[in-house]
Length: 138
Image (cartoon, rainbow, N blue to C red; front, side, top):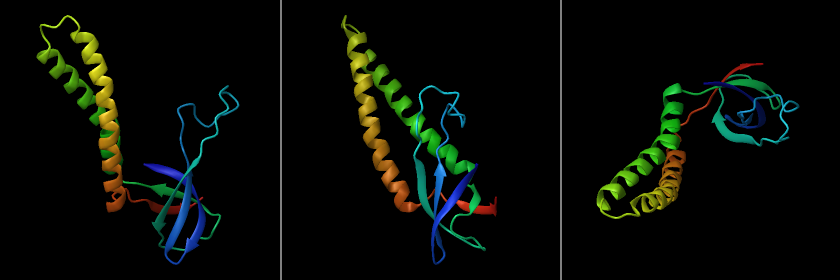
């Protein structure tokens, strides 16, 4: 996955880089009536080569790692929610309110998924599995 970032600060062999988030409405904010202001994502990465503060650079990440993160972000809550609905439907098969109860339980399972993902994210950030590589200057 390639993106464009700006080097904000260089300290030794570490660079602080900011990358604009990519939104669903694209880069043409004039055409979108919501007038959203997307904050930049800031991260620190190792640098090899001749870079200066203010340079725009190409940033690459490993696709496998990005796809794993996307699966965790969207797949785990979906799987937990569907499993919750299935279990509640089976356990309350004779109850006339099983659909309402399973809907409430599925929303509650999304809250549980949030805390699972928060713990997962904290662990992944500590391991620093999402490596960014600075490419050529733009």
